[in-house]
Image (cartoon, rainbow, N blue to C red; front, side, top):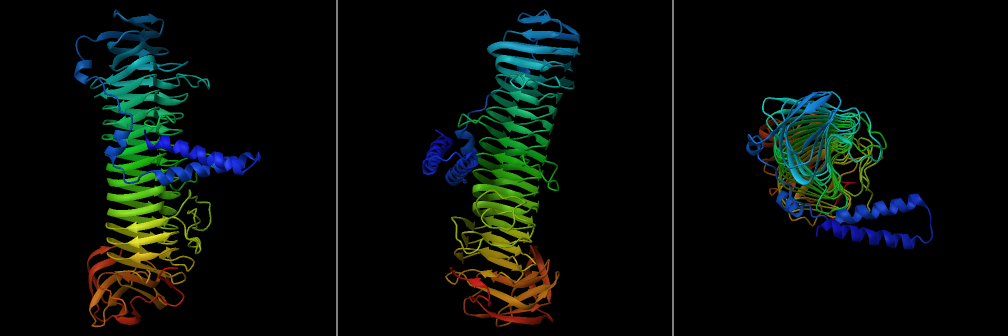
Length: 607
């Protein structure tokens, strides 16, 4: 039994309890809000964000396999020839009625020619039927171009060196069972070395009522609504796939079975331009290879309509990015999960009109690389954990936010709901929620105009390197932690405005210092931190105006004095402005601080 089964029971209990407490209220809006809140809380708090790709796929329904290309193309294949408004075939199991060709037996059928207004129908219950498309052009004005209304599996093989085209009706009835240009009531496989162009004029481009598997071929889909839809799953193992959809690009929508409703990409290329979500899975999204490029809702510079979900990757349970490359430009969240997100090896680059990566529960980074080039909130989750990998975040509001609830670019501030106008007021007050930000390793660079590293609960750094190029306005801070904030290892450099200064707690095992300067220094200034002997401990080149600097490393000893200088030189590699070495030269001393003491007006230590 998958975790989802347990979630349904838990959510139902929570909703029932809420309803009983509400008494006889008939306020539909209130009931809906209670239901939604209960579902979100239970799902987010119980999904294990550390699950590997193998773990998630093993718990899901196993994807079907297909007949090999060499077997399908054997000399035993039957021939079907299309001729405008008619067709011909001498094969057993094939009947022709005007421009409608019906196949009723298992087997392999090679199809060539053109149907200007006709259809291929597969009515072979529980059978595997392979159609070798050998340069066909099929258009229907009333329904799907190819429809397997009864079949165990429909295999579409694209003959090498050929281009086939399918187009359907301009509209379907709301209750139509067949509602895509290429439709299968059973499993659907696309394979072969040729090209397939599908135009879904009336609804979806390609749809399966079971699972959809793409092994190879060049597939281009244009659809009024969803591009490629598999009810149980969509699995991409290879091929060169391009989808342009008015609705969602790739979608798995089985919301009944706990082991279904997932999308997995292991190879090939997938390029999606969608008016709705780029990839939408009721349960899981898993990438272990391949190259994914998504533009949803017009990209991060476009505000989505109020009733439109225009996220890049959207999952209901967990998104695991274990391999391959993922590039997303979304008007809504670039990567979103109602449960958890786990980055463990993929190379990910996103731009978002709202959150770069959002998880209602855990967001865990165990490897790979993540680059957020534009976002309101960069990375947001109830529990954010960086164990390994390289992360670089650019955001107009908070960079990393340990918070709960879905953020919105129309919300103000950066309290528990996150989001907010760029550079809105920081923090969630002193209320400490059940949220956390944890860094044990890896590299995290933040460039934010709101709070840089923000937790509405606790924050812990035990290793890795964290560099925060924080806000320039006093309403936010480079660091903002409502609860305990401790550091016991690694390197922390946080620079920003001086209006809301937060430093690690005095109970931290590793020393730290916080220096508020008499006046702000401009972008491009080299700041040196030196010990009492004049030896340079840290060199940092500002990328924006700065008036406070917080620094921690194994070289900082609590109670010792350190001097802050401007000028001198920086050398070696730079991580977000923090250089590997530097020299004072003729630098000017601008401050002296004692490690472990928070500056006047600032905060340090447990609250």
